[in-house]
Image (tube, one colour):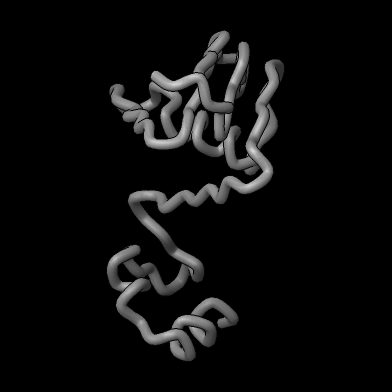
Amino acid sequence: MTTSQALISAHNISLSHHGKSVLDDVSFELKAGEFITLIGPNGAGKSSLIKVLLGLIKADSGDIKRSGDIRLGYTPQTFSPNPFIPISVIGFLNLNQKVAQNFLHE
């Protein structure tokens, strides 16, 4: 591991949902060139951790720091911009830009 600055770091992240602990004191750093794989059973908190890192949900406690030039993205397994017309992520990505924009505005 290099001594370079972390692109993203999470320290002591905790999150609960409906009174159940989802994340308990999670800490890690990701530096340039490194990969992290999240593995666990359904309900283990993998998606919740990603959403906290992206700022989509707020952790109960802990600290997240992002490098100023980092760009983060998240693609869930299922994606339905319109709940009445479900579409897979692959299907959405295969739409051309104009069709995709119209689809999202419906």
